[in-house]
Image (cartoon, rainbow, N blue to C red; front, side, top):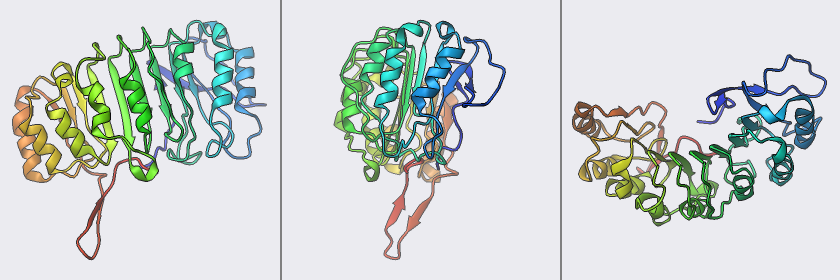
Length: 318
């Protein structure tokens, strides 16, 4: 699976793409949409920073609540340091900004594993009013431990997430964080996270407001499921999402043999490699308690070599 659609909304607001150079369109109210400011990856007529400068000149930025950073030129080869610098330089002009997404590109613009990223710590510290922050692309992605009082939702979508980013989240003090969504990816595309790196997130000693935990799109999904089966944080979750990865009967059995999950509102395991009997056991155990269970495996494909070796894949890699 690849990412074929841009974000449709952010912060509960519909996404609206700011017109390109020479284009004319009626602009909505500043606070009515999530503004998507973008350039082109290939043969760009305008650098992202120039597009952002036009945006700031034509829109009442004091009312902007959500901002989506789309493509920047040569994102496959250039990190968004200049984009980050432009955003930080304009922070006094964006007093109402509550949501920011960095790297909203589809596969036709830049495959997720090709997107060059950067350390995003400065964006979070520079915008203390943010309630939602998201980023796409794992190459060069970094985060240092920080304290952010207002952040409620943190999303990082990658085909291969550096363990340093995971450790940065675990080292951060995020007292308001309710929703954490990490696409961990595969080693083929740079993922080097081990289950031990997730311990600060699973221990329950940090992130006191966390209610929705997604650790997904991972080639070590069975190990993550086994760790979650006994993780203290799970007892206070409403949603546990272990979807999009290489989850097999081993991980499903670990979940069934661990702490009760009947308190959950939702357990998302879609895109899995679980056999029918284990799926039946999960349904019999959880659905009578009212848990919404997603076991859809329609897009989980496996290949088998002549020698019997089976290859299974995460939902989003390249």
